[in-house]
Length: 128
Image (cartoon, rainbow, N blue to C red; front, side, top):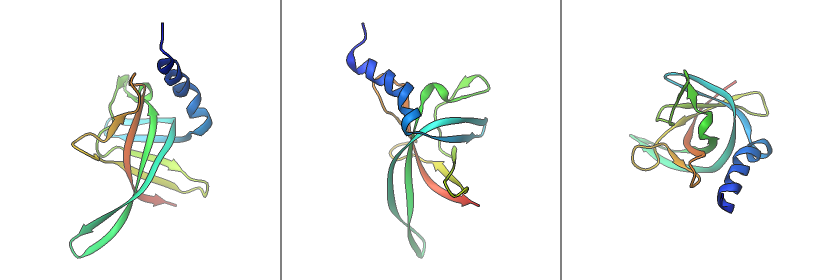
């Protein structure tokens, strides 16, 4: 018998993306994944200092179904350098690059069953 949490997580993994998701493609060294549904996560601006320049960078999380991350019939875990491509309402493609937030992983498992991954990214560029 499944717990209420397990049933709720499965429901969200199935229905949640349809209600809150946008279509993205993920580019990895092994190939392209998608298009697939991804739920936009938190938006933050982090400050950085590079030599004589200071600035901010937009950080963004994407929540995706773990079982959607297949390249060449092999399931992949998000890795630093992966790119999430999202076409915004203005027709521009926003490219987000996966980066580790703490340690070496650039994603967290968002639920107890491991059905959803939260990929941590930063906005790298906007292609017109």
